[in-house]
Length: 241
Image (tube, rainbow, N blue to C red; front, side, top):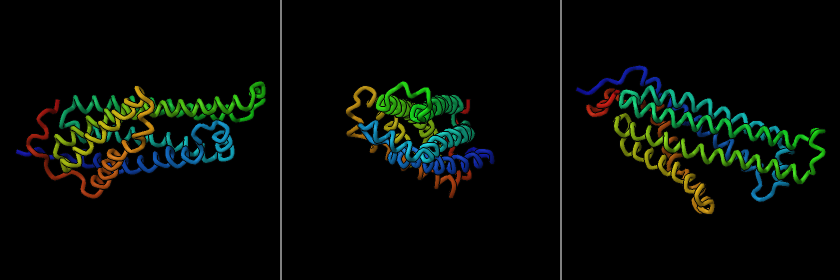
């Protein structure tokens, strides 16, 4: 007989849907709008000037990034509640991968505070030339970018496992779950390849992010509007260890 999906799973699925949409919107604002407006490629001077001229926007970007990580924690917990009946072991593994992602991301965000301290004009910094301070600030921004590379690797790996469980569970259309597996693998493989050969980033970035973006937005609306089905198919809970 098909297994019933309990109320806690249904509520958690709504949380997953909302978290996907809100986290996507906030992260796009922080990474693409804020950093896109302030960070000038290959120009430490212009980047420093932009940040000091729009310090409040830069700080809002930091706060937005931290908000994304807080939302991610709720998302991870909700995904575990929904998918634990499919496979508790794999669900826990995915949780650990996503927690590594969140931890690294939060740590990488600390480098943005270093940027503000370096460019603050404090008295103790006057012994260092302005151009060197600007270069140091740009290095700190680069550390944030390097952290994001690691974040995407673990985000992609954790999302791959969760997407596989969605596929196995038959809680959502299998084509959507398959897109999640593909997009997640691509998300992990892209940054991993960039670590080995940085020149690849200029070719594939940011297009490799598109499949996972489509998956998460579609999942968000699907889970909010339709939720989980009344029953899981018979083979969806064969491993609940």
